[in-house]
Length: 148
Image 1 (cartoon, rainbow, N blue to C red):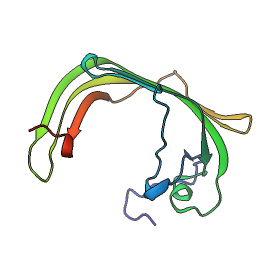
Image 2: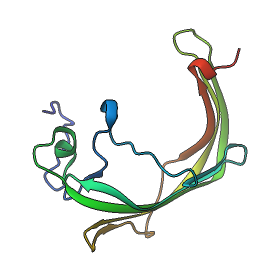
Image 3: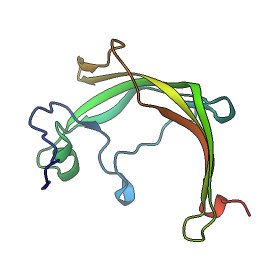
């Protein structure tokens, strides 16, 4: 299935919480309530909150992708906060095959995440030692939304 020296090892993976495949083949994606995210691109701040999202536990990423065994019903809750601007940049590619641009703030991010199977809490993130390489908050425009 995976080849090469960097082939991932999933033998120690216990949980793979993901929503599976949606209509049209879109995967690992769910519709969220309109109030779940709050974004202030100019300030470089954002937050995303979900509570008791019905999801599935496939046990491992390969099973989540290829469905070797049926998943277990599960729930997750999470809070993600982006803040503390460390850099700002603008990107614009007017090439007719690309048509992409945006204004982005590089930030720090903090995540709290919990997952349950039935009433049993099976995973909870910890604040101890939590670090992020970076986060980004911004406004992107592409395709038909590309200006000019």
